[in-house]
Structure formats: C-alpha cells, structure tokens
Amino acid sequence: MTERRRFLRFEAALSALCEIVSERRKVVSSIKNISKEGALVVIDKPLYQGSEIRLSMDVPGDNVPVFATCQVAWQRAAKDTNSDHSFETGLRFTRIDSPDRGRLLDYIYRHWFKFANKKNEVLLEDGAI
Image 1 (cartoon, rainbow, N blue to C red):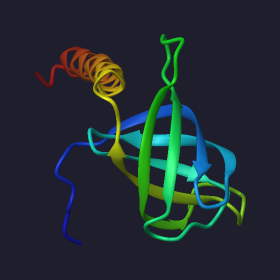
Image 2: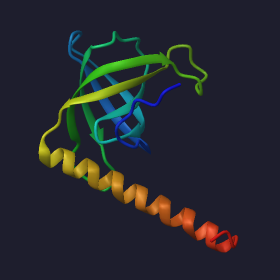
Image 3: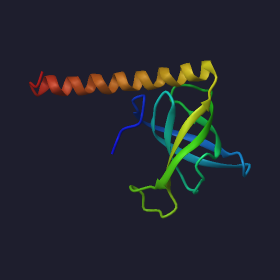
Image 4: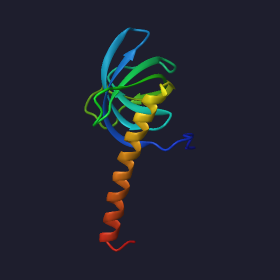
C-alpha cells in the first residue's frame, strides 16, 4: 500500500463534536490521530465521502475548543471497538482559522515532544543510545 499522506500524523486522544452539515446533526466523537491537514475520528454514523463536517475539538489545557471545517476523505468500520456502529473516518481540514491552527499545532508538537523525550529516556536506560 502506498503512503499518500504529506504530513506526519500524531497519536492523540481528544474528544470532539462533529456537526454533520447536511443533516444538521451533532455527534460526539473521539480523535485517534491528527496532523496539520486532517484527523482520524471515530464516529457512530456512516458518512459519504465528501460530506462536510464542522469539527469542534477539545484540546487539553485550553479552555476554548478548536474549530475546523472538514471533508470526509474516507471511512471504514472501526476494528478496535466492540460495536458494529463505529467507523474510523478520515477528515481533511478544508478551513481552520490561523489562530485555531496555531493552537492545535502547538498541542500536537508539545504532545509529540513529550512522547519523543520519554522514548529517548527509555532508550538511554536500556543502553540503546
């Protein structure tokens, strides 16, 4: 399988609210990973490719949600849940204001930096480095 992503994705455990624009319906979801251009969310509803989603993301340590308009890039049944009604959904950001993008990227990089430091500490302790 060919990797088509242009930006690295970072594991994230964020809660989010997805507004399905065509249905004027909001559903709670969780974000599994995120990048500069999109996110992988788990949602309980099948959606069509190209569907417009308004995403409100709760970023730890920030009192104000990050808002983005997204488009469904792909969707498949979630593998790691006990529900037949969970779908992993790839979202592509189509609009995110610069301040919100900055807050989101700040969280991603801080989260990644902590992870990288922990990984290096383990490698040092094991004598691998």
